[in-house]
Length: 202
Ligand SMILES: N[C@@H](CCC(=O)N[C@@H](CS)C(=O)NCC(=O)O)C(=O)O
Image (tube, rainbow, N blue to C red; front, side, top):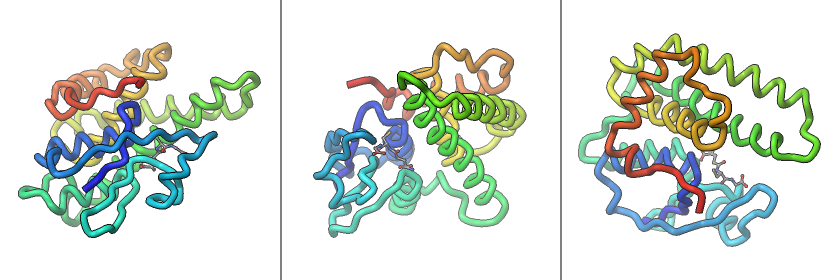
């Protein structure tokens, strides 16, 4: 298998953490693929018409995206699937937590693009800031539960989003006022899968 990959993408990091957790890192080749919203990677479009990474090319030529689909595929081929509860309330709670973490990440990417413009659209900046605060408040309320649950897809998405805050929005100091979330994030950062996939510019 071949994974369109970059060392600085938090979405690629989600699938790399899943691969480490499930013991699948040696099962695919990483192909450095440069993407930018303002300059689509033409070569990638035949594998993923949306021009996004991660994108996984399977050995039989089938192609999977986006990050959560790749994570669930990895879980399905692992000897011991652990990341997606099979059914019931546990599954839907995990998928909802994943949606919160990955949706937060989507917003942070848009926020960063807008913030870096010469003349950012102020109502959007205000909206991003409001939703960011609401997301942190909701995660703080759920942090103790996160710590008690088996590590899964929701933890991966939320942890990657908080680590992306450290990477691109360190000035916002998200830990202040969120002690339980801070404590949970320390346990996330201590996992070998997370340590092995630190995102870097490059
Ligand atoms: N929902 C997608 C988001 C992936 C995504 O936005 N990746 C960024 C890199 S961090 C990308 O490929 N951006 C290029 C573009 O949007 O043109 C997923 O979960 O895989």
